[in-house]
Amino acid sequence: MTKHNKNIESDWYKFQEEICDHFNNLGASAKTNVTVDGVRGSSDIDVVVVSKYLGTDFKWFVEAKYWNSNVTKEIVHAFSTVLQNTGADRGFIISKNGFQSGAIEATKHTNISLYTFDEFKKKTSHLVQSNILKSFLNRTMLTSTRYWGHSKKIRIKYDLRYELFDEREILSCAIILIIVTDLIVDEDISYPLDISRYTGMQVDKIDSFHELMNWLNSSLNELDRRILNAEIKMKNNNDFNPEYEYFTPDIMRLCTKEKIDKFFDYSFLPEADRELMIKYKKEVEEFKSGRNKLLRSKE
Image (tube, rainbow, N blue to C red; front, side, top):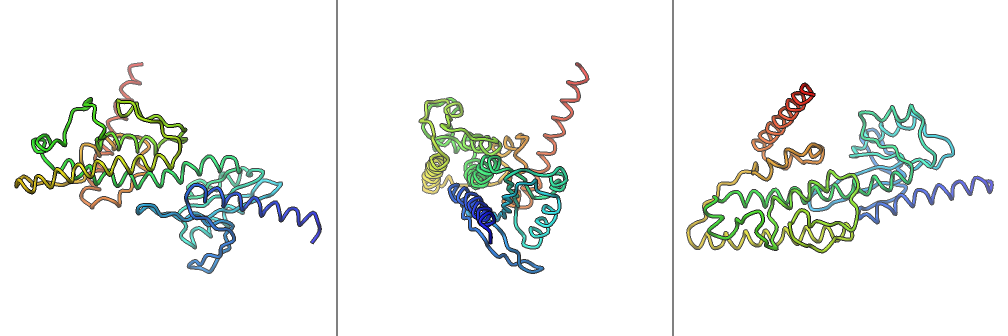
């Protein structure tokens, strides 16, 4: 092997390892040069990324192309076959130089994304974080279901219900859901993150995604503890008679988020509630569409 070829191989290796390190630094588990078995044989993958967090898991494959030329559509087609064969959730082709127009066209309606290395670092940070935030979305839904399962009279009696501008340190499910969903649909979470605008009171700024997860965990833990303490008192007083359903007012507000559909895990819901939510979301979208047409006709 010539010195020139050795340098190319060394640069490609560093490129691949940088991609792997980026995912590991985000909290996912990434490995390089992995042989993956599929339904039609095995495939060699440059970088395999997996993550499991509070019931949310994914498997991504990465092709690292340290080429001086643009990546072609043939590479995209071959990689798409690998993803289908192995059942990966998503694929990335990371190019040193860029992509031919045919390669970009070939990714339409596929689960493959094409990025230069700088684009990749920015975009995938949000993708990994969004998958983790989805677990908080599911967890908050459970807490919301427990809260709204009690009548208004009972919630007031056991100090679970309070007015919107009542200055308490315990956030409501509604506020936590708004914060989580806004962060999920945001293309770029910037730190330090100021959530005072959601809470209506001064809160310390959050300086990293790690701090954000700790804050969400702490807020939900305290909310769960408060509901549990109230339910223990209800049981002791023979007042515990909840009527649970997942489709709460908090979730109805969630349905109005335009971009939330691709992040929401409908399989998390029982079939009846899932169908009800999908129907309600469709009605909201139809209402918005009709309103926009009316406004345009008046212009």
